[in-house]
Image (tube, rainbow, N blue to C red; front, side, top):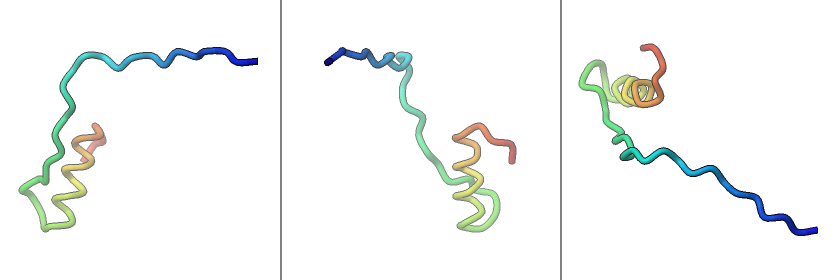
Length: 42
């Protein structure tokens, strides 16, 4: 019972680069950068 399953390919777009926001302190900047990368409201 072996069935081949196909994995849908990802759209052809370049990977987004992570960055640290210049606003706030070190940890806050990292959190804001990660939230911005994930599209979460900050």
